[in-house]
Image 1 (tube, rainbow, N blue to C red):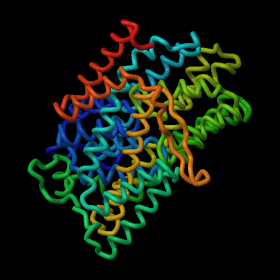
Image 2 (cartoon, rainbow, N blue to C red):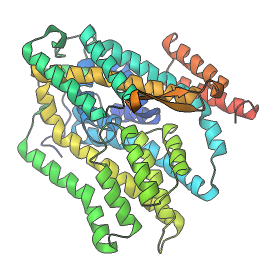
Image 3 (tube, rainbow, N blue to C red):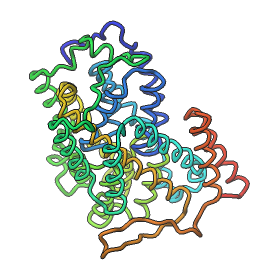
Image 4 (tube, rainbow, N blue to C red):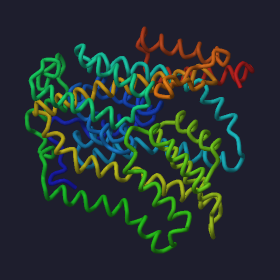
Length: 461
């Protein structure tokens, strides 16, 4: 616990925050872009808990970390609001719906080998998620791209990741360096609002923090040492115990070591790391097939929680097929939970250790400019995710097109694979959100219900 866990006067009641974080968790569909959109809409636009500038500042930090950025963003905001228990609550709740959903679907998948009914249930949900992701790109882009230079950075980031397959960390580093240099030089394009001004309706948390009423945001060396020690033990002690007790060749040891390693190299979001995970899990460990990996990705895309939750599915199948003295079901559950534990535990370490120092950087002009440029690049990345999701939602098949000797390569949809009902539902969801500002819950329920009706009528598989 931090030196003082008592909430500051005027803070949002913890019971209210608990209900809101549960709502965020249950609506966290659509990968990182959709999840960030959910969080932004609820905590920034609806609740006015945190201002735009501080939200983007926290998002920029989380984008630089390994692991699921949306879950870490929830942890960061929860920590700002209610210290350690707030961060734990927001971060843990964010993954619980995904843990339950993926575990249930993994059991069904392993026992029965196909997910036809579940796929039908989620057919309409994908179209709603597409509209949510598009809304995120528009809202965050509209507020972050304040001039032509920042818009150009976003455009270049989009082109770089879409057409040239530039690694995500390289995009972020380049944007950050450009912004840092621009900020130091005082270029007007990189002079950003520090977020200390009072908007028409001041955010609750911003008012408290700017008034100096939250002492936990100030760095404390002793606190940092304790945080590092506690979370390193929680993260790595189970892995060390498995290695010493069961040996390096046991499937549980392999799961623990492999996914603990993944937790520190998963820069660039889930899509960046899943290709490597698939390669290792399929070709090296032989835990599952390529088709099964794609099925697991489909589960993660259409259930609440971070997309990286697919790693629980991989851990489940690995232990299910090599249960040792346990039953396949018991082994699978333990394997899936182990993969989840070593994947998400370090996320709390990164936030609780680094957030106090990151908060102190908000007044630094050069660093603020660097983070503004990173935000612009992130908008381009979100736009790429939106396009990727649109292509794979509205079309059943895409083909890889390359030019200039493979320097340029991107996916194009096959026109004949157009799914007309998916297109219709997607357009309806987009109109409902953009034109009528419909809430996310009605959109998700309506599209899922429409998908099930179409399935019952035999119009979709």
